Image (cartoon, rainbow, N blue to C red; front, side, top):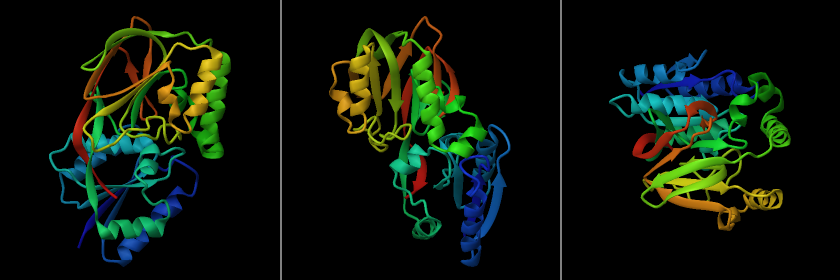
Length: 294
């Protein structure tokens, strides 16, 4: 008999989340699985429950929530000695990592995936003492994820992010960040509007923001958008949909195992949609640290 721990965030996504989780649990129970459901209430609940689960004899963790909830489960896995396979049931407003991995969203398809039990070990990113499954970023639009109120996310869904993004573009004057970039590949000072350190290619709902990213290559993808005029910036963002933005003269795109970013300015970092401290910071890849069912 396989034992399954379900960790889910009831405030992530629309109000159908609980019904979907309950339907999945019923399918598992009817098939002879032992199922325990844990509901998160506050920050770090998912991480702490994952650590507890890994220290016991559970076979699978199913996490249902947005990127922030998945991030906490991944951190719990890293902090544990036993690497329990994780299945990601997307239910957040934006779950970039689950979308990138093409994990089934419908319950029947997801249940069939659990039954097959195929898994892979994927990389994680690390920034100072924090970890990220998908992305760490700073600059224009990077703080939209944690500025959108939870109740707004539930009512408007993905549209809440775009509305907040438009508000931010309207309100700010694009003051560039005077950024120092240190890695094996580059050592330079640059005025930038946005930096993205990515593990996967899908970020903020844009599927090709880091178009060459691969969660199994042992590298992080770095996207730097340099100081640009309005016309250049518009051109860059239009081309993000096709991935051609990386060929623009004002975009620096490269892969690295480690990069350090520093500035004298007050620049916050977004980690998988949550506030993650400020620069300076060192970013590095942690190869094959997270086992997921696919």
